[in-house]
Length: 492
Image (cartoon, rainbow, N blue to C red; front, side, top):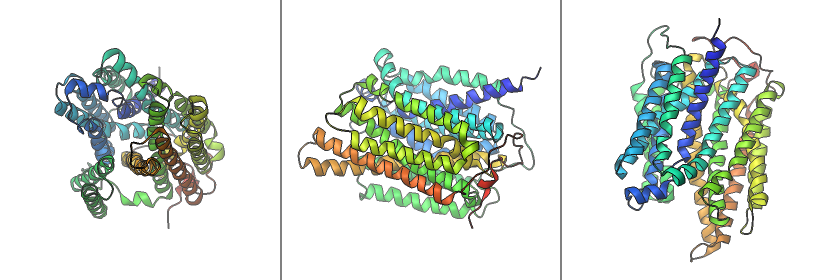
């Protein structure tokens, strides 16, 4: 009896679980921060590092994590990442001091940096181009969105019912289940051709550059854009990343083959991801502030306010799965970007001091999330078009880095924009509800503009019409990850 379909189903379940838990841990601790502060005695300003330690390690190591999957093997990278993530979660839930908790969160970020790219890679190389991959990518997008949104709700429920430590310890049984399923479903790593070598110089440069960039962005909440701290971190990031590009063009087996970005589909996909998540992450942040600080929601009720977003992502992703073969990548990216932009524009008009969930949150959330859901499948398709399976981890690390940097950059920039608007409205005294809402509304407007620019980039830079996706054989270690021929156009 052929058990390949069953194994493939379990492999998909593993990839979705990994994506869900990585996204979950970006947001699940936020609601638990007050309890963590009171229990462990964090000093003022130190609590932010419970969040930043994860973001820094995750963002800084994504490119390296993606390439490791290509070099040492996808199954090996997956199992090591799960083990590291699980041990760090267990340790974080048992620690008794601020320093150890921050260290545990950093190690979680290291594990997540290995897991996020390999989850995407497993889908790209396992499912043939066509309906099968479209369905898998749609579910992958739903898992990512659900993880981020459920994290807020789960953080509130777990903290209230079982204490803050439970938000970390809950990862342990999830990781153990994923490891058991992975041992059954993920094929053993095979060595074909000459052994690949890790580009050590490139790994050091891109890790240092990405870490410096994320550090600069997450610190803009406490240091202005023009401060010596921010400018120094940005300068270091620029120098290291430029050096990385130079080195990658001179080594035989680069961490990132720069020629990958000469493929129009890959380049536009990463630009689209950068812009989309710049707007989306920031908009979610300000939605959370609005429902808690203006509408007066508690943690659990604030979490439930994000459920319409999960619903919209599901609707958009399912629609894209069923229509990408008919309409093509370009059309769905443009339509999704414009719908998302309209949703955030609606937020800008709807939020108010006297607003409520039905008139200020529900409609805009559904419209924006349906648009974002429409983009998930075509983004994944475009990001892997024409990429050899042996470089799938490289492409996955790149698109995940674009997503992480986009989210950090958008949040930093829009937080500054909102703060300036609030200060201008509120004068010299403490900001009142009206001034806060003005700041939030401005941030939503900028988020909508970013998604509109993303849609414009897809409209101008992608081919006018992609050919229908046709199901085919799974990619081999040497064959390209197949995709519509219309997406194979290269930049001049």
